Image 1 (cartoon, rainbow, N blue to C red):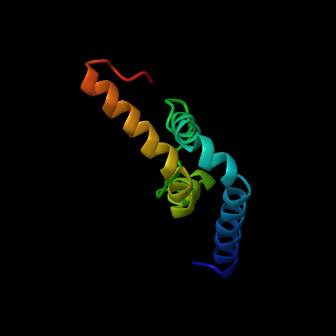
Image 2 (image 1 turned 120 degrees about the vertical axis):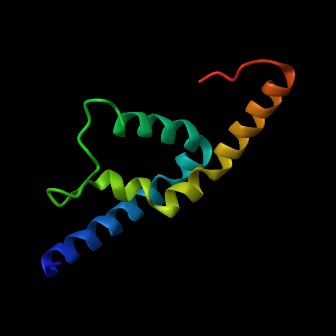
Length: 97
């Protein structure tokens, strides 16, 4: 890997972490729906690949989705969503998407 590539990857990782820290209050309050919509956007049918090994391309979406900071910030609302889904399943209702 060239030095320039390493510098770019480090810069992208730092910018992703900075963006996640700036948006962390929003993610702590509404992380689960935001993450779910983001995943739908990234993995839609006509979307470009986030990791293309043949051409040696890595999308910034790859770094966002593999960031432990994003998972940590979205954990509280995901736990709440699972709790509500569990309650509705016990009542016989289907959880809404």
